[in-house]
Amino acid sequence: MLFSFLKYISPTWYYNISSEESSVNHFFLDYRSLDESQQKLLDISDCYRNYESVLCDAAYQINKKGLFSPKAEPLAVNPQKKRSVTIKLCGGRAMAIHRDVCITDVIDNYCFVKRFFSSSHLVRIFVRRVLTLHNPINEVRGLLKARKVKRINVFAQNGYEGYRKDYEAFESALIEDNPKVSVIIPTLNRYEYLKDVMADLEKQDYKNFEVIVVDQTDPFNEEFYKGWNLDLHVYHLEEKALWLARNLAIKSAVGEYILLYDDDSRVDPDWISQHLKCLDFFKCDISSGVSLSVVGARIPEDYAYFKWSDQIDTGNVLFAKNMMHDTGMFDRQFEKQRQGDGEYGLRAYLCGKTNISNPFAKRIHLKVAQGGLRQMGSWDGLRPKKLFAPRPIPSVIYLSRKYFGNSIARLFQWDSVSVSLLPYKYKGKRWAPFLSSLLFILFFPIVGIQMAISWRQAGKKLKEGDKIELL
Image (tube, rainbow, N blue to C red; front, side):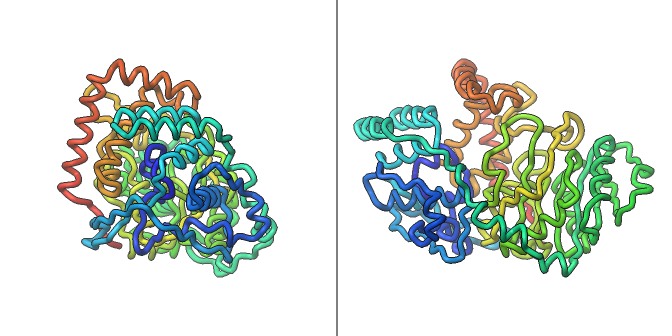
């Protein structure tokens, strides 16, 4: 973590913690070691009291802008505090992870928030810290100083232009080697949309791939899979279990590379080849394709260029199958709930795997209203369908508590729930967080019970332990 106030804005961000295998400095670079052309893309501020804050601000920009440079040196600052804890990662393997390596100067933290986030974030952080008995004089001083700081758009002037020509002209030796790719698709009651998925796969310009479909539909329609011009393998799974389906498919895959996909998506003909090209060009472990949703949140600005990824979306991601020997497979504690892909992405990061967000391997995610995880129990981890159902879904709190600790998990639960009381379709509206916060206060007795149920059920998952197999 660079600044301690990031815990209020992105409490479960991958880069807020690190391990010996995944040093945070690998993803945060010293801007002074960049080429002059790259340095010009940064907004180096004089608003901070400490020079280390200037360096951390620049490192944050480099990470967000996708400024890759083989000459760049890791950022080396003296952390003001550091806590190490040991967790069980997979297969009984213990790993030390590090939390709270950050700049703690209150005034500099307020300035950082104002530079990169909205004024509403600034006010919410101030109110929270005053109510939790932090020194009000320091908080007021920080807020007043931050009022004079100009907000910047960190996504403007990103790093893509610096290597665009090299990437476009790159002849991938990996593609020339023609490795086998296994495209894995779990499906449930979506034959209407799956036919478009199959049609898109037939049009791929990269041909050496198999398609593994794990069909959980009832009634199962075997006739649907006849006549496709694909190396197609279909398994009928009676149990409705998403992570079981993906794990079973990965075990049966003969490809050197695994490409995880969804049954309600559309892709371009160069989708597979762009994933392979990304792995080869950046010499990374994971190519995380971007997902352009037709429902809900606005498309993030950083989906337009390559950068270090802070997520894995199991509807559009490619990696070598043997990577799972190190990371383990998907945790079945997330069955019929949410964030199984988020947990796996975090686990891969802690194992030292490099993950690039790939704008050229994009998919259109239809997020159709029927079938899939929605039918298994939930679409949205923050919006339960029943009055006294847990909020958020317990698996989300399980992930937070396991990796980030109870303090951050509580912070995440309160903040995420307070801004999620409106329907998902309003998620991207600017006025939605304010109105949702008012509803949170008004209906807190009920919402508080939902949150307590979620916390208790997450605790049961932690006590039981993960359900991670090794490949």
